[in-house]
Every structure is written in C-alpha cells, then in structure tokens.
Length: 354
Length: 268
Image (tube, rainbow over all chains, first blue to last red):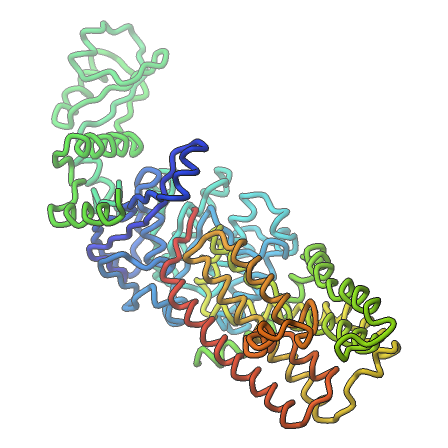
C-alpha cells in the first residue's frame, strides 16, 4: 500500500540570466528560486492497483515517484510504502520496490546486462533457483537472449529499456514505480511491455504506478489515473470519470455517402474534423440517440463510430484551465492549493530570496 | 538475514564485477597509473642532488628506496573514488545505487579493492627494481616492521578511501567538486610525503604534517619499509593509522548520511 499525505517537495535552484555581466554578478550575489515540484499531494494506492500518473513535463510526476522510491527526502508531508518510510531506505523496503526510469540506466555501462543481473542477484540476495527461473521467464517474455552478453553501451535505447526492466524485476518486487518505461520502444515492443506489466501485476499482486507520455500505455494499463500539474493533484479516479467530468460530450465519426448540407450538420453537433468524406462531430451525450438515429436514417452515413474524447485532448484542456486559473489568481479546476498551502509555498519563496 | 551478513554474501560477486569493470575501463585505468609516476620524477631530481654527498641525512640509496616505496604505496593505497561519486551525484546516476540494499560505501569499496590486483602489474616490476637496486640497502630488515607493512598498507587504503568518499559526498552540497579535489590533492602531495620525505619539510610544516591524516595514508607504510625505528615507534605509527582509519570512516559515513538527504536526483 502506498500513502502520500500533503506531500511537498521543493527544490532551491540557482537562477542566472544569460550573459557575461550576469555571470560576474552571480559570483557576488546569487539569486535562488524555489521550484515547487510537488506541492501538497495526497493519495493512497492499495496493493495490486495499477495507477497511471499523468501530467505535462515538469508537473512533478517523476519527483513524486522518486520520493516514493526513497531517493528524495520530502520537504514536508508524510509518505509510506508498505508501512515503511521510503527515504530511510530500509532493506525490507528496497526488496519490495523497484523504480524504472526511462531516462536513467541502472545497467553497468561498459559491461553486458548479465553482469548487472548478477550484481542485483547478489545484493538482493535472490536464491539461485529463483534467480534462474525469473531470468529465464524475463528472457523469454522480453526476448533478451541476444542482448544478455552485449555491453550495455552497444544496445539501442529499446534494447536497453528491455534489459532495464528485467534488471528491475529480478528480485520480484511487489511495488513497481515505472517512469516512462516504454520510451524509445517500437509499437510492438510497447505492446509487449504493457502485456508484461499487466501479467506481472496479476501474478504477483504487484502495485504499479506508471508515468508515460504515451497515453495508450496509460489507457491500456491503468484503471485509475492520478493527474498532477504544477505539483498539485487535479484528478484522482478512473479514466471514465475523468473524461465524463472534463468533457461529457461524445465524438461521433462517420463517412458521408450522400452529400449533407452544412447547416444540417451544425444542427447535429460541432464539426471537429473533416477528412474527405470522413467527419467527426462533437455531440452532447443526451442528444446522442437522436443524432445517431438521424445519421443512420435520413442521412445514410456509413462506418459510424461513437467514442469518448481522446485523453490527450482532455488533458490539454485540463492543463490549459489550470494554468489559466493560476494566471487569474482564481480557483481553477482543483488546481489551486488550499490557502494554508499557498501561504507556505509563498513563505518558501521569500526565504529563498526571490 | 542481517544487512551485514547479506553484504558479506554479496562481496564475492561485487569483487568479481569490480574486476570486470576495471578491465572494461582499462584505458582510464592506465591513465590513472601514469599520474602516479611523480615519485619517479622526484627520484631523478633528488638522486642527482644526493649524488655527491648525503642531503640532510638522505643518501642516494635512501632516495631510491624512498621513492620506489612511495610509488608502490601510492599504487596500492590510492583511490579515485571521490571523482566517481562526485560525477554520479552531479549526473543523478547515484539514484540507481540508492535503490540497492547495500551501502554505497561497501559497493564502491568493493569495486576499488577489485582494481588493486591490476595495480600490482605496476607495483611488481617496481618492487623487483627496488630489490635489485642500490635502494635495497636502505630497506628495513626488522621483522616487526616487515610484518606491519601489509596491515599498514591496508589501513592506509582505508584512510585514503574514507577521506575521498567523504570528499566525493560533499558533492551533495557543492555540485562541482573539482576545485576542492585539486586543493585536497595539492595538500596531499605536500603533507603525505608523496613529493618529498617529511623530514625534509621546513620544521613548522613538518610539525603539523606529522599529525595530519596524510602521513598515515601514504608516508607511514613507506617509513615502515625504509626507516630505522624502534618497535614501539612502529607500533605507535600503525596505532595512529588505526585511529585515523576509525575517525575517517566515521566521518565518511556521517557525511554520507547527512548528504544523501540533500540528493536531488537530477534528470529523468
């Protein structure tokens, strides 16, 4: 089980404008800025859940994962993973968790992945038989056989990611923090990794917290999603709930067989896209039966499909609204921290001399 | 199983992988070895100074013995762990070490110990030259001193490693450590007997140098090999080494515990 309560992680960063004069000035007087990477996030995840962590670049997703994995000390708030405080990095916790970072390698750069596996077997004290079995299984599932004895530096990004995933799972952790695990992989391998993560989750009742820029990863794997922006949690729930709250309208796509007048279309809904004879309309849910009936009846359209709005679109709207609210100083979505939190954040900024 | 027992079980694998890494990084390793040849330069210099008559008690044989012993000790007891730690912190790759249930001090130590046999490739020919040269006359023949050489080398390594581990860990506060490490290395060369025997230093510097850790991480094993001393003095020197080893080890672990809380795990 993972619990985060009012989790805050601020970084103090040195700020210097470009140019020689600024470089000289910064020798005498350094300006610091407090970056609120995570700013009062609260959530809890039960054992065996698969949760997608979404947000734009710099939203605080990776920082949160790093705090949960014990790499970073939180500035304030409480964090607990399986009853352990992560930043103490007790052996019992490290045996239960793993963190895969698409941007960072745990493989020994100049040695083949098999050496990193041997190292992990030794430091995690994995019994030989279990190590063999897990490695054989991972080798088959991830098609690692030709890669095991090649120096890591000679692997492609996709090959390396597969080897990273294997290295991270050899000790059979029950909590997986996956930060962009499919980065750089081709579509077939992305699908294979998704299937693998799902089956690992089911077989070991493992908790999975996943961030990915590929929405398909999140949609395919995670029944629950947490959305974070500017370090603040703006949604926690299932995907359908998020879509329904943010944009309850449906997308109706169809191919025109007979010409349709523009004003006839406007009565049915908002035209979002037109590609030759293929059209996509935005239709309020309550009007859907009537619109569909009309399209299939008098208008004779073909290949009709009804879909929820794409997740990317929802998120774009969501992050846009959050930013707008911030700029206006008004409460937008749920993005503005509560007054107490805002005061705390401002104090941190003052202390940093900004 | 306790963390210590687990670490012991993991040690053979850590050492084996350390050896594999040393072989993989052989170019870097050779460059590092080349940087340890300063004693040979100093030997050429001081040999010519002492070619006609002894300089403040040091004859030519004494300088030959001293600098070849210095080269041997530096190769066996020196480490470059501070540079490695500093780089891993700066680039954020330290993150991956922190996810493994083994203290980074042990993990780094194992990989550096694994490199020692390779340094013997340099040490062994130097030792042969020393034994065959006129410098052999200046080597100790005292059984106690001879018996203390290996333990003294091991302790010197530990002091070196602990100090450099602590210095590397300072990167948690100051990202770019090169300036500090260069300053440290300058002090080391002057105060450890690496550049010249401590008795040749001006008396006010020597008085300080005799108590600083630099002497105990480099000069003491050399002194045991080359200097006449009483049994009591030999034991006191190794006792001093043990005290510094305990102190610097505690310092390294303390600095690590404080520093790791500041880790920002940049990137990714």
